[in-house]
Image (cartoon, rainbow, N blue to C red; front, side, top):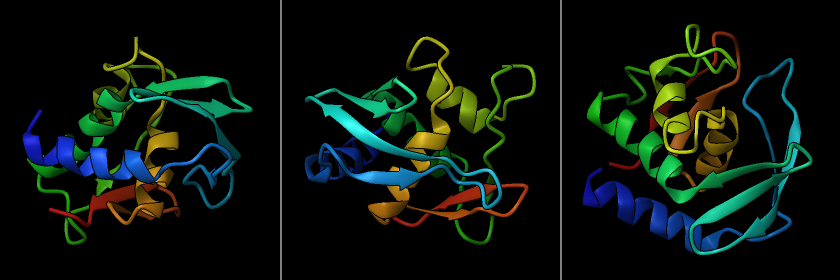
Length: 131
């Protein structure tokens, strides 16, 4: 991963707080979640009980940056429990945490931090705001 992506996530990470609430990025089936634990390298999302390490956040930003996904060229999120139907962004993040689907939790956190934009209308998409 690149230094700029790591620095972006370090900045985001420093501002995250236990108890912050978010909603997964789908207009019709979005689900609320919150940060229940945070340490220097990992977040725990509740009530889904998903742990996400910092590397998965870096992978998301890096994927969008490396593939030039800006507002004019958004990336379909294509989150799926099945790797065969998951999109490349979903796979890039889940590869960092033992194949656990996590992109739908990462993106709202990055959106609230003004790192990405998200279109919640299907097909859901995202793009990088910070280069």
